Image (cartoon, rainbow, N blue to C red):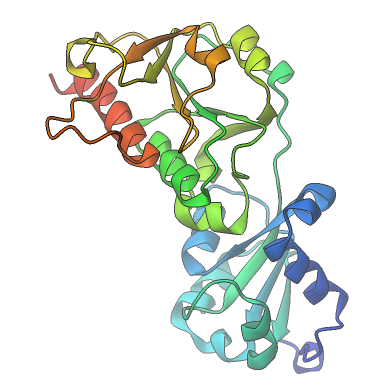
Length: 267
């Protein structure tokens, strides 16, 4: 694919550039437009491997000769528009640090829980997990162990924000993620037993049978799982012999998901 030099964008007044800046920095604009931005060769590769449609690709002029960029451009559907930006302009809008200067605008899936039948299989519930890094790590771990469905309450960090996408390393493309739910939505839609980590129980994760489908609930970094969900969940403890108050939610969730996997396939 050859770049048209007459298309080279140098002004931040360009409408696409203005849109990308807004999508990278404003959650409100991502919701309004129903779009987000993926940055870097790894995320573009993950999207292409999942056949996820790219609305538009932007790249720095100097990145065109990069081997990975050339390979990505060859894999793009023929109708995908590629917009070259001057290096200075690209660097002024990117949120990713030094790397391969390529990004793409993509649509955010708008999934409604009502579109699903009652959930009776494994799922992950993120109950107001507010840090994008934690959300991305949990999504990445869920995809790694084979969980397909993730339910997020309304105060959870956006699963498709640029920060969460980077932390998830493309896991979003392998998942069905339902956002902006309230606890009642989840209790009505999920019939799989709910399990939530708690320091107020003697039931250790290693002695609890996890071989049947489960719905793991991971809660807010400071307040934990909300009372409404906790009342319907089985409390599970992660042993902490040194007496620390709690683990980071992403680490705790990853331990729970991998213990579930271990019991089913490696015990």
